[in-house]
Image (cartoon, rainbow, N blue to C red; front, top):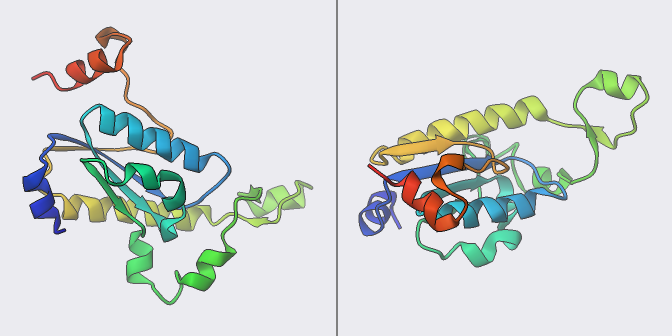
Length: 167
């Protein structure tokens, strides 16, 4: 469904957007909680997931109203010869070093993380989301391990939702 039609059918003034460029042992559960929390709060939840790596873990949430899941990132769209199935199969959730000096210092790791590449893909995918959702009143761009919680609103989900949507 085209985004304009989607927004017209189910408008939500607040949206949250996250980009997953890697998978590890915790990321599936964190993304599941992220989607469930913000959907329950009444926000539109926009998820870009490189290679659809977390689709299995979040599948039960994808048909909920206000959840927009895209099994790709911008680099996959703009550089399909690099970000292809072969590249996706090389991705794993094992321990990675973030800097070559860590390996030189003796840390054990299977491979170097492509952190700079992931960060660039993430920021460009956020730019893409801004262009795809121009009619969205407000979009909060955050990582999937961050939940928006206001202590002054109260402890329950209902109190949090009411506080977040007050005008």
